Each structure stands twice: as C-alpha cells, then as structure tokens.
Length: 107
Image (cartoon, rainbow, N blue to C red; front, side, top):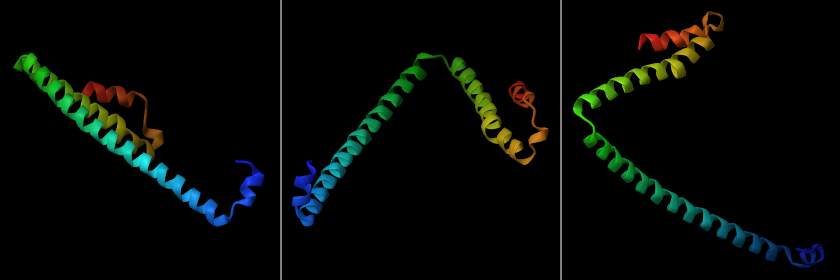
C-alpha cells in the first residue's frame, strides 16, 4: 500500500481492515486444523486396518517373536533415551559410550 494512501486513511478504517484480515487469517487456520484433524482420523483408521491385515498374514509363532523383539527394543530405547541421559546428568564422569552397547547386550 502506498504511504500517501495509508496516511490519508483514518486510523479507525485501517484498524477495521486489520481486524478483517486477522479474522480471515484465523478462519483459514481453523479450516486447516479441521482438515488436518479429519486426515489424522482417516490415517489412524487406515493404520489399524493395515495392522490387522499384517497380524492376520503372519503366523502366531512369528507374532510371538515380533513381540519379544519389540519388548527388547523398548527396553533398549528406554535405557538409551531415559536412563542414560539421567546418569549423564547425575554423574557425567561415570558414563561411558560402552554403556549403550552393554544395554543392547542385556536385552
């Protein structure tokens, strides 16, 4: 907007235009949020369907093996992301890089 035109507009009019632009912007954001929420719901449904298909496609023995692997992976992740950082904060001199390797060996 040209500075001369801007100066000639009364402040009330500029404020009104600003409020209108702000309202349009917020309305667009609300619409986008609604769209994204719908998309999340659809993706969760699709994910559940695909997991069900996957579970029915593999044998029960394979499912048990996968659960065991998942459990050991969760333990290792817990150590790497929770326990190790705690130890590092509490006493950084005692933490060694091999501690992470040891965590994977324990699981």
